[in-house]
Image 1 (cartoon, rainbow, N blue to C red):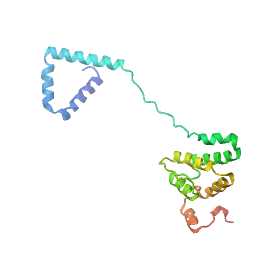
Image 2 (image 1 turned 90 degrees about the vertical axis):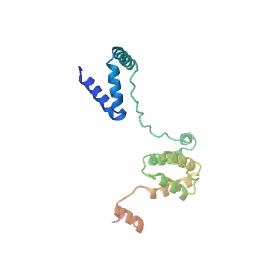
Image 3 (image 1 turned 135 degrees about the vertical axis):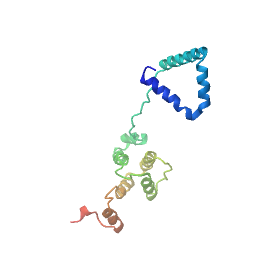
Image 4 (image 1 turned 30 degrees about the vertical axis):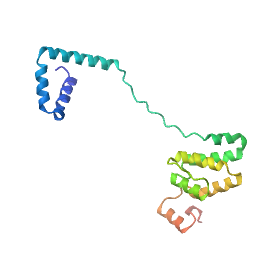
Length: 177
């Protein structure tokens, strides 16, 4: 044996003893001792090594995480109704940033409270697109009212005191003077 890699290969072969048992190893040792089998094994190993050199090594390419794209219905609205577009675009940005309705469950509850068409998806991103699609159909006055009602769903103070204030319907601490 010449190198550490050859020794490591031999160790790996010995580890196969557990898988195959001692009998195949004894038979293989007897076969290798014959000159023609030794020559045949040498030829096979050489061919395998050549094939390995010719096969290009590929690395897995990791895809960069795509930012969610703005729904087409929203971009089409930009020229037709710029005021509604701005309202919905601000909402969309908040939804993507999870500053409002941070979970799929929150989105579904908001949709139900607002009596909008039910969201039937298991993906939050698809639910956001569905919600925006439903809100586009509303008149500006209703849309503004629904967005303003949305603020109560904002991620606020999630401390024990914050939850107590929500339960007891108190104003947040910052508003108390």
